[in-house]
Length: 181
Image 1: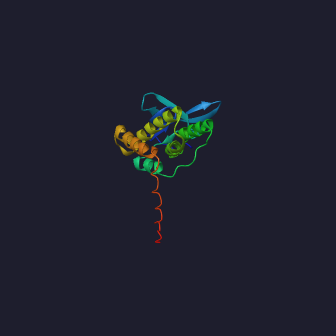
Image 2: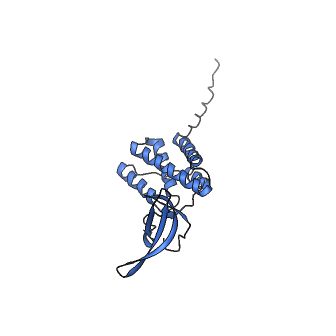
Image 3: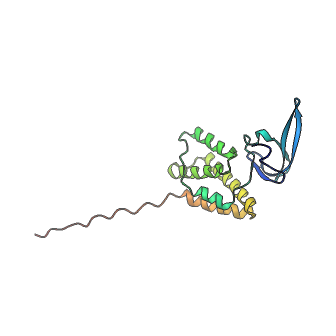
């Protein structure tokens, strides 16, 4: 991400500090070299300075996912997650911090696919809850709806996706032929 990617007034999210708005761009002298920073006013209060050159690596990104985009990703085909719990945690953590807009929604979708087969551990349930809250909050900001209604829509879809797909009907048994004697 470079300084041209985000502009003053853009609504953004930082994976660790939450939602905010780019308030300004500042340059500070660091060892004789000017370094540009985004100054983000956080929704929950406070300011955050993020170097423009490292913003993507830190997961800072513009809000772009409305409800339609979120639901489209969630309804897509789930990709497998690593079988080993530690690798799965690392994968989900990477999706949490990814600057790619659909990464978190794909993480939720893929975790739900995993859950249909293997269930969820307590940590995965917690991650899923936090991820759904974040997805709903982003959709609310993008679509201009209340956070409660956006979160409810996400929760409803996640509940639907947690359930195993209906089993196909059993094939009909061929009619038994009787011989007359």
